[in-house]
Image (tube, rainbow, N blue to C red; front, side, top):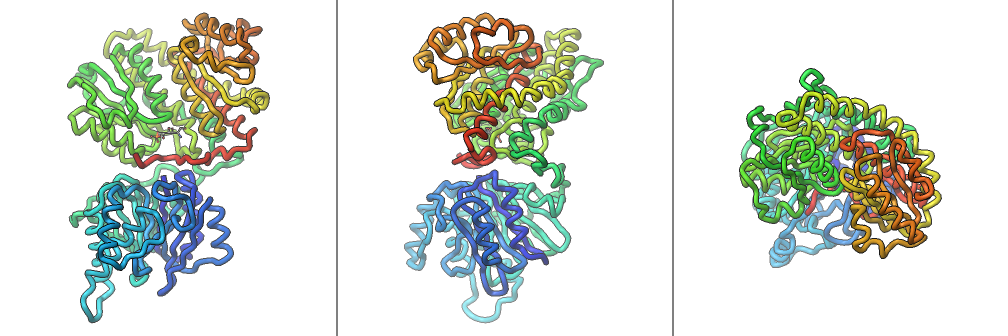
Length: 625
Ligand code: M6R
């Protein structure tokens, strides 16, 4: 949801900013721009379209200078045009600003500025209003005449930023430069991530460390309401209210190599193929074969507290919500704890009746999703213990929750979530095992679950070998108008997840449903051109699924079945295409059954010539409501 990169140092800023933007392109790709300072000139290049377009502009006319700011946009206010592309300038044309987030009261602020009479706005964005506001506060604080030492100008600019942000309602991650103050960048955040990269005689600002990890692995993850003044060889963190800020310099846990695509044509395919390793990493050091349970120290709860949990709420958005839906089946089956799944966006705004013994889990790959963060804050505000299941270790959700479990899946760059999903389900299985073993699960049941978990990485490897076969199926159905997905129990949410993957990256209509809902209305859609995909492994509801498939077949609807074990034979003659995954207990099967469907969506998208890693209208991390 927009990406920001800032640089101040001794190298040319242009290539560093452009490289950073390329790495942040997953956050938004409607338009992009840079402002680089060269002596008393501000060099701006910006345009609608991808970073590649900006790259062309910067090659034609390279901006010169050793400090600057840059931005890749996911449009909120105003269309993705050249005018609306960031950076935006204040009234004097000297202050350039990039922004990630939404200034909710920008209309009111704009009207106030217009009443002052000297402001002309060139764009439709909320960001430009903020630039004008900061600029006018800065200009108003200038002494009537006389020399102003540079140090005072820096303090005045920081003070203007603080004063402006005190008037802002909404979210922001910002970076700004001023033509009159060389080698100086100011950043601030509230609700949108911003990290300071600490280098040697150079410092960086970025929405995500992946933009700067090639230059430094020392990072300060800024907190909400932090304002940072960055120079080549120092930085100072304070708060919007003007107090001194607390910070710690951390080591980024991955390297530049980890975020390269390698030989894969797309990040999504790379990440699908990483799942044996990422699931293994989610379990690493967390299984106790002696006690037949899981060890999750990050939950930060005593055994007594864990035993007292009477109800669980799982919340998240998109793919994370689908993982939560599988979590509901897992936690109720393994631990016998009543569990509910809440859309984070709904949960945060409604008054869900909760009991005091309720434990809330906020599930989020990025740990920055605005709705999930809102749900977390709301549930903490009401006094419930709230834990995070996150991939991004330094994320806001990870930092603001009472404890949690990290996924350790490594960076996920493809906009379509894949490996984070299987890691989330793996962690929910670990939580189910832990809570179950504190209740009714016997040692032999615990040991059976551990055995099933330990077998998973090899079974994932086997499942990935189906990729070529699935590519053939994708080719066969690429001209279809869409796809329906059906599953039951643990595999019902897999139908939802598969449908989300297909719609996100192929733009084909697709829906997921519990198989039995077919006859309650969806069957009206069934026709020869529209394939139905049944996720029907060898489990207790296989024969029920079989009945539903017969209903589709009777209406000449083509059927693709994802099944396991010997069930494949029973499907010949009913399903047009059968994909067979390894047999596994029902509670771990979703980790395997989702993989052929991730591959199906991927191969369909490639077949249709879609931009797999950067599908239209989407961004990886949704930091606005
Ligand atoms: O970072 P999060 O897990 O909180 O993201 C939640 C959703 O925005 C995300 O899963 C989205 O639905 C994906 N693009 C799905 O592939």
